Image (cartoon, rainbow, N blue to C red; front, side, top):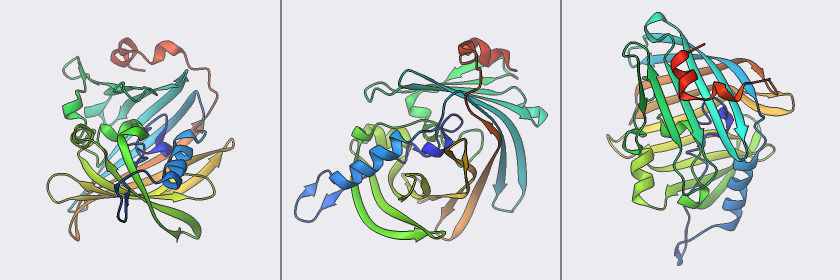
Length: 273
């Protein structure tokens, strides 16, 4: 689960905010320190009533690029989070929309809808489809929302540094087969900065195809007192071969905007901006 994308890809890293522990001689169990760290990752203030502009760059294995411009909005509804993404460019994806209701209750699966203007049709994303690629990117639908920490086990492996900052390295694995199937991931390694509880790197083992994904927050900025990943890269590899890469760049990030609650509805999703 990727907390740094809260409000846009509030995900993007939130699937990766839960982890596996196997203690020597004890089998699978919880690591209290790892759980405490991940709870702080999930509880970190990510702002409210947020708007931003996103550039999504898709790079194939030949180095060819496609660029998409997206308007993003998010707001909190109690403990739940709502987010809306509307694609603005290029013309072939204009007004494509993605709406997410990210529920805090661990026993309630998040709701997601994708509006395809060419078909004038809204598709609700089923659990069985959430491991699929989101709009041709290296992020999955499951990456777009949080996962309950209770669905994962943890293990704190070690400490190291990333770009001069101390991080904890935490290993992650779903507790149940249904969560593994939903995300399409067998396990993850999360690198959590110790000073701000942001996941700044991650390695993800994909269940099928012998692939791994590598997440790297290349630019992290404090905006209105809130840490925001303004540039993030996700690379999919098989062995040493790069299969695909996605770069996300955020700009014009604003918090405490006067966002109409009706913005986060299927009706508005279909209406566009």
